[in-house]
Amino acid sequence: MSSTESSDSLLKVKNLKVFFELEHYENKGLREIFISSLGHPLQYFFKTKELFYALNDVSFELQKGSRLGVLGVNGSGKTTLCRCLAGMMTPQFGEIDTKAEIRAIFDSGTGVMPELTGRENAYLLARLFFPKSNDIETIVNESIEFSELGHFIDVPFKKYSKGMQSRLMLSLISSKTTDILILDEVFDGADMFFKTKLASRMMKFIESAGATIFVSHSIEQIREVCNQLLVLNQGKVHFYGDIEEGIKSYINLKS
Amino acid sequence: MYFREELLQTRDLTVASIKSRYRKTWAGFIWVLLNPLMMFGVQSLVFRKFLKLDIPDYFLFLLGGLLPWIFLTTTVQMGTPAFVSHSLLLRSFKINPMVVLSAQVLDGFINFVASFILILLPLYLFSDRSMVSLVLLPMAIVPLLIGTLGMTITLSILNVFYRDLNFVMGFLFNLLFFLTPIFYPKEYVPPQYEWLIHLNPINYLIDPFRSVVYDNSFELFFFYFLKSMLVALGFVLLAYFTWKRRRNEFYRIL
Image (cartoon, rainbow over all chains, first blue to last red; front, side):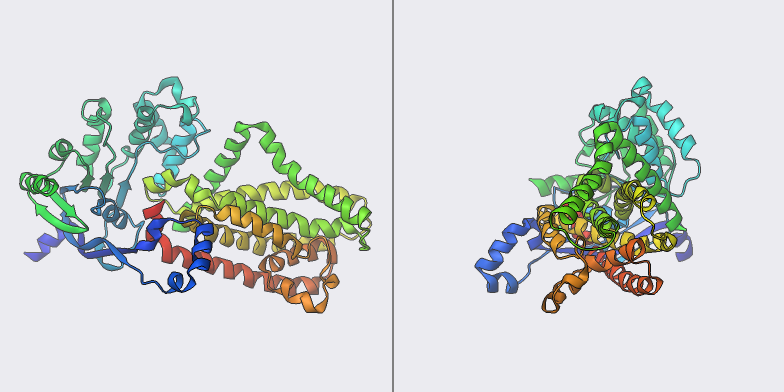
C-alpha cells in the first residue's frame, strides 16, 4: 500500500528551516560600517547576532495532480519556501525529497536586456529558462505568434508596457510543461489573468504540470486554481489541507 | 553536462550585451577601444619623455603591464554592480547567477583583446624584437581571466550587501595602480618596500602577461605562470565560499 502512495508522490518537504542573521537586513554601506566600527569597535565586533527564522519546521507533500495554494501575509515565508524548492536558496535544516523537474517563476515582466528587441529578449529568456532544450527556435517562434505582439516584437523591450512584457514572458514559459510548477505571485496585480486568451493557456499550463504550487494574495485566484491549501504564518505552517477551511483560518489570522 | 548549457547561456548573453551596448550608442563602442589607447598614449609620453625612465623598449614594457591592468580594473568595476542591475532577472526564475557575470567578464575581455592587438601590432612592426614568446600569450591570459572572474564574482556578491562597494573599489584601484609595477619595473623598488608589491595580488596576475610581451624568457614565464595560477585559484575559491555563505541572504536582499 505504501508503494502506491510513494509512486504518486512528487515532492516531500520535511522540517524545513531557513534562518537569517538580522544584521544583514540593515543593508548598510561600507562607509557606514567603517564609521560605526571606529566609533564603537567592541560593540561592533562582539555584538550577538540575532537569528530570524524565515521558515520554521515546514513540512508538506505534493502528489501528482496536487495544486497547492500558499497563503500568508507579507514576510510569512512564502517566497523563501518557493526559492528553496527552486534550488535558489539552501535550507539550513530539513529535507527536500524529489526527483521531479521543478520550474519556478517569481515575476512575469522580466526582460534580459531592455535595449534589445522583444524577439531578442524572448530568445535569451528561452535559453535561460529552458537550458536543456534543443528546440529554442521553435519555442520562441510559437510563443511570439501566440503573444500577438505583432510588429512590437521588433521594438526594444524597454518600450513595452507592463502588460506586454508579461504577455511575452508568460507565453514563453507556458510553452513547455514540467513536473512541478511554482508560480509565486506571478498574476498578482494582473487583473486580466482570468479573462484573456493567455489566461486559458496558463490554466492549461497549470493543469498539464504534474503538480503546482501557487502563491497569491488573491483568495479568488486560489479558489480558481488550487485543490489544497498551505497557510504560512511567521515561517510556520498555520494550516495545511482543505481550501475553504484554510481560507477561513487565513482570514481569522489576518483580523 | 550542465556545464555545457551554462556555456551556451554565457555565449548568448555575451553576444547580447555587446549588441545592446553598441545599439545604445556608437560612441560607447568606440570609447571602450579609445580609453586604453589614450591611457597608453599619455602614460608613455609622461614616463618616457617627461620623467625619462631609462628602460629599453619602454612602449612594450608599458603595454605588457598596463593593458591587463586596464582589463582587470574596468571589468571588475563594470561587473561589480551586475548582480544588482540584473536583480529582476535573477529574482524571476532560477538561473545560475555566475552566467550573468561570466558574460560581463567576457564582454570586457573581447574589448581587451581588440585594444591589445590595436596597440601591439604597430609596436612590434617598428621594433626589431623577436615575437617568438608571443605564442605563450594564450597561456598568459588564462590566470588573468580566471583571477578577474573570481574577483568580480566575489565583489558583485558583496555589492548586493554593501551598495557603495564600487565607489570604494574605484578608490582602492587608484591607490593600487601606483603600488603595482606597471609603468616602472620591480627592480626600481627599494628592498625595504618590496613587501608592498608582494602583498598585491594583482601584480601576480599581470606578471606572466608582461613576461610574454616584454621579457622574452621562457623560464621566467613558467615561474610567473605558476604563481599567477595559484593567485587566480585563490580568487575562485574566495568567490565560491562567498557564494556558499551568502546565497540565501543574497536572494533575500537582492
